Image (cartoon, rainbow, N blue to C red; front, side):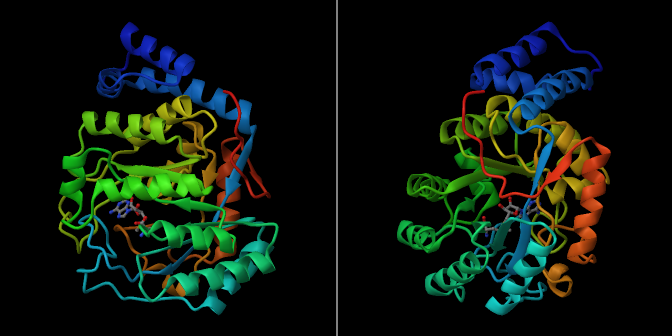
Length: 356
Ligand code: SAM
């Protein structure tokens, strides 16, 4: 990749900052024509915008991976139904509440319940859990990330007290979607879920893997246009990393460099978005999350799951932090965040709407 920034790429970055949008062809040109100097130019702008809206704050979310049972069979995912080698587990409500208690002591004011699409965690079971968490921690936000459900279910959980929902669209290109998922899963339904969630009133998060098999610059441009249209409050992107017991075991991982560049683009396109520096980014590079913060991210999601189950929630190989205790993770992250000049905020860390 070139060291230099061409006038065309510089002009595209300037216009993205001013207008928060480019055409599909322009996004393709920007992504394909990126360079080291273009990244630096982009990250400088992204940091300025992020600091104007969120200051030096980094929001932390306590991630509780409460079940790895999943009815789906996504080709990239280590907890897919067909992976018979995955050791399945499901936390009890009492265990989940204990994770929240520990998290609260450690300064977390958002809990994220993430899991596979597990039929045992029924609508009623989830509603009951949501109510218990919100009763005990009324000053905390609760985020769900449990996949595709019908609108009534999303509404029931929202009425029970859930505040936010994470559901990555994965790819906005229909043909690409079909290369990543078996028949039965569709981009159309994924999008329907996202629009339902927004309509109900959740702070909604979408996103995609960077460098997933068969992804092109054209796919990424479509992802950006879709995100611009959806206008989610949160956007989670992280590199695809192969898992040894999936059909994509031999595929190449996404790169740090492209993930950072896309984080920078997202900060310019959706200035107010909550953008996590993901665990996958920290997995492909030892300082990946710190570099993510310097490229425009403003959220980190350390693991609050009991250490005994962490290795079992293996979406991809070599996932970091699977041996640590929650308190260790919290301290380690605090040091990492400080090392790049930011501070952990002990607050719910809600989306800040407003003009850029
Ligand atoms: N079941 C819920 C859903 O579908 O949204 C939440 C759990 S799912 C495992 C969470 C995210 O993990 C997915 O949206 C996907 O982008 C990411 N993921 C799965 N396998 C991955 C891999 N091999 N590399 C990187 N990210 C992966």
